[in-house]
Image 1: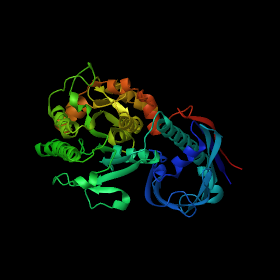
Image 2: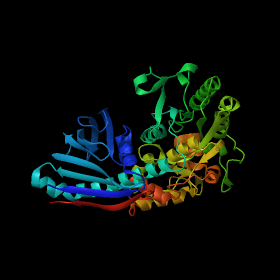
Image 3: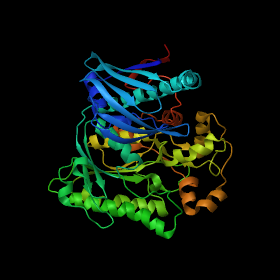
Image 4: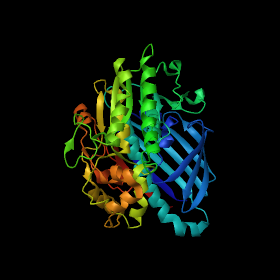
Length: 475
């Protein structure tokens, strides 16, 4: 039966490594973005008899995968065994070895058997071994990244309320904060389930009870209608603005009425604040641009004023283009690039201020911890690129040509004002406030960020995790 083995040394104690895996949110952090895996249900965590029900799509087929845990040894190991799924047999042993007070070894051992006997081994054996190598290199890197950030400096566990927790950034942030040991609650529009750590609100109707937001150490608001959800008709522009300004106003004013407010209120904003600014480097002190996006961002940030006036440390995070495979711009443009028909947008000279999802989540956590950080903070990588360079880099990572431009006139005809503002305009935004505060970027350069998100990297497991080995061998 084939056996796969991977091990990495992590610069934290074995107890901290085990605790990270034992938290319910760990599974979400360990699913690679390029795999189409959905968590359908979970019962318990990693104790004997606990289960996880996954839905996996591979090669055009869909599989239900039930994993049942057994042989749990607190602090040292647990095993999950598949009952149904794409493998005839799957037994995954997770082990945590103590190498000292601040060092441990993470070990994954998988014994598996492919379906269809010798035919399955012949047709799929090499592919499966390669996929396991790729996946577990990524998993070990992410584990090291998270634990490194959570072990740095004075790290406080907090009770955190998140608006927009089900979105692209919010779902990643919730899982990350959960594995760090925070108590994470979500603002939801439907009836709340307190056992699921939910708080009901109705931002359209101005409904949020003061009593429901008492006792939180931090509040994060990431909500807002999809800015690329359709042509910018007058009605949709009103929806974009209202979904941001009205909800933020309601939340800020409610926090201002609390007997004891949170230590920090972090509200999303966007680099759209700067408008179309050419090649000039822009920092948090640069004046806003003109047009719909800058005006919306100005009103969005002003909506936090009630919390700031009440003495709550308030951070306005001006977020750039988020590089994430499961949503956002990268997921949208991937198909044409993989087909070899991707290329620059317009003349390709406009600057694209981007940030890896991994760094955006880390920057939010950093802002929640750093008591000196407040006001506008640019959430962008320190090396913005021209759109043409972005296209060429993505093509290089995918090993595809990136030479077919999308003409500016065609973008304007198809998408109107939205296409002009989001695709053809640009701004060279620099993360000066975060850099001065000492935020450590994991992915300051575009190619590294793309390779991480697409699983197309090679080399060491990255900061916090030193790869020991990882082999897929049959025996």
